[in-house]
Each structure stands twice: as C-alpha cells, then as structure tokens.
Length: 246
Image (cartoon, rainbow, N blue to C red; front, side, top):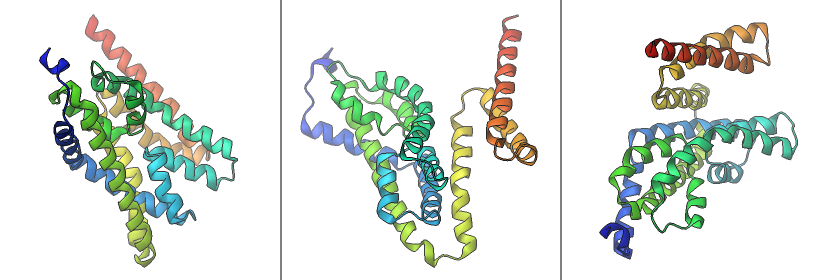
C-alpha cells in the first residue's frame, strides 16, 4: 500500500533509470551487439548508406525485421510489400509485449507511457526485463525498462555506425565472418530463450532439413523446413504431454 501511494521523486526515477542502463550491460547485451556488427556488414554489402542503416536500427529495432527489410528491398519489391514483410516478421513479438506489459504496468501507469516502451521489446530486452523486473518496485518498472531499452538501442546504433565506417578497411575473411554473426546470434538467442524442449527439437530439425530442402526445393527451403520441422516438434510436444498425463 505504501509503495502504491508513494509519489516517486525525480532522484528515485533517475536511480532506477540508471539501474536499467546498467542492466543492459550484460552477456545477452554483448551478444546482441555482436549481431549488430554482422548486420552493419550486411547492410553495407547490400548498398545501404550509413544514415539509412543507423535509422533502421532506431526505427525497426528488432534484428530479424531489419534483415527481412533488406531482403525485401534487394528483391525489388514495392514499399508496401517490404512494410508487410517487416510487419509479418514482427508479429512474433506480440506475445512478448502481452507478457511484459502487465509486469511493467503500475497502479497509475498511463497507456501513453507503455506504447513507446513497447517499441523496445525484442528477444534480448524481453529476456533481461522478465528476469529483473520482479526485483524492481512496481512504480519504477517503466523507468527501469526505459533505461534498459534506450541503452540497448543507442549502443547498437553506435556499434552499427562504427562497424559500417570501418567495414571497407577489413580483410574479406573478417567481413565474411562479421556477416555470419547475425545468424549465429539468432540461433543462440532462440536456443537460450526456448522454455520447452520442443523449441530445441524444432531448431535441430530446421538445421538438418534446411540444407536438404535447399537441394530439392530451392527457394522454398525455409518454408518447407519450418513447416515440417515445427510441425514435427509440436507433435512430439503434444505426445509427450499426453504420456505424462497417463
């Protein structure tokens, strides 16, 4: 009752904002930064300018959405097709937002505060927030998450800009290695955030089936591997739950 009725002071908000900044300095945060190193190399190879690349980091934020956007632009699609592809790739973030907003919402939190904070929701920020928000007073959770989200975005904008500027001076082997950091980040972050064994099974099946379908159905390998691998993993998950009940 005392926490809900207390009016947070400026110094208290500043303290929790700084704690959010400090929470961004973590192993997941460094792994995310390494993925943006790869993204900077990918954007430069695709012909994007420095301003366009950094702007994408700030506005799109979630890394898969930016990769999808680059792919849509390179394929020669229209602006609406690119926007639809990015929106479709971002649908996966909706369950994260739905799970995180109730944890952040205080007794008097206005919606206009939650709307911009939801922009920062991605795999890394969501995992860090869900781990630490329960130790934060409810009236300070939006302030804490603002510090966390702003720091992740601003730092990776800087990382992207620096790597973009020095990419031309790097040896070709190093540039190729930087491009590989992005898919490696996706794989490790998804593996670490999976809460069910079915998620791991789906990833293993995708890694095995993807190259096979690339030889049989080039151009449709991701769709085929995703549907078959994901469907098989879901089926095994349902079967294991039924066995536990019986």
